[in-house]
Amino acid sequence: MLLSPTLQKILCKKSIHKYYFKEWSSHLFDRLRVQFGGKCVVCGQLWELEFAHVKPTGLNGDGRGRKERYYDIKNHPDCYALMCTKDHKEFDKISQELKAEWLTKNAKFLQKI
Ligand SMILES: [Zn+2]
Image (cartoon, rainbow, N blue to C red; front, side, top):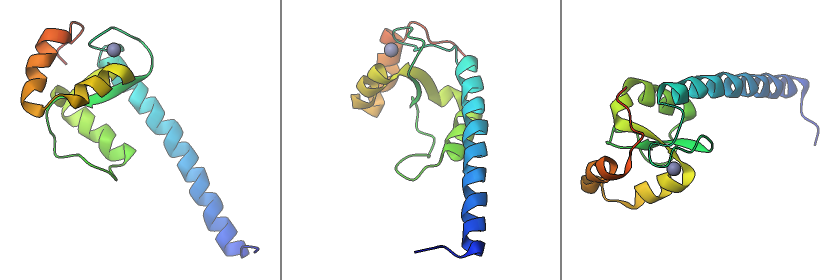
């Protein structure tokens, strides 16, 4: 089915916005990664890095957007640590009350922000 010209216009604007938002947010996330030391706090890996929740910030579960996530990390840097996907997966298996202890033992690249 063909879309009406109006709908085409709306969809087009939306995808343009989506594209620029993606560009913009990946730039912001790059800056955050640099701020966080640019490497996995556990093994020092420089690629496939993610922000792991060290302390709860209230931003959890599905449906959290990229923008919300960005501001949450920026506003609560002490609640996050940069980790490679492998270590992040391991870290998420640890119960909340043992996370701090685990980090003290394993995060040799952890720096205060
Ligand atoms: Zn790692």
